[in-house]
Length: 248
Image 1: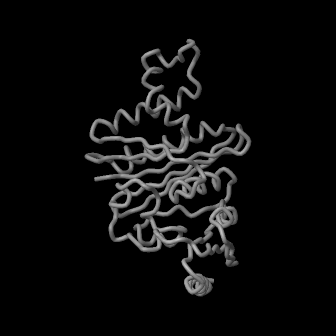
Image 2: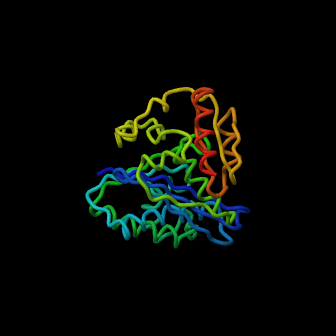
Image 3: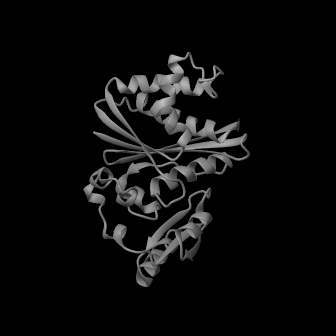
């Protein structure tokens, strides 16, 4: 079984109040995680996001016999898990210049959890660019930012089809990686390959249209129960607005 996970962390002040977010695709199900911490740095929250994701896989989900693929936009986290961490362990958690590794306790917990997962699973790491419209990376960022700001946000545990209703793009457009396009054939939609006519958002019952995704994202980021969707033409835009008006 293949498991996809996007993680992200955020702090408002560096150090300051922080939040983390994680989004999983496991078979045909979606799971979201999020949380808040006080007086933390951005890097600490990036690490916290990964720790919570790993803890979910080790504990609640009891993951085994799976290929787990992480998508992370933090060069700090990726550098650690793919290289630095092994050297730190060999050097008794000291850097090359014999100073204590920053955030040592967090890295040690990541090392422990990865050790458990690697016994019965294969783990792969991929770098994604932040704020480039990769749907699940943006969703993880919205979760992290919302928790950092102590704004309520609904965390989803649902099937892929229902989950797509809150996303601006179908789930199959979340990455150029072929593995994600193959993950759930039922979710393949012509919408993912067509140019956007506009984006529609609804916040606190008020519906607005936007010409660009960044404009739409700015409005919905950190907003509780916000909805947003790509439209393909004027008729599609009108249909979505009509559908959402029936929700209020």
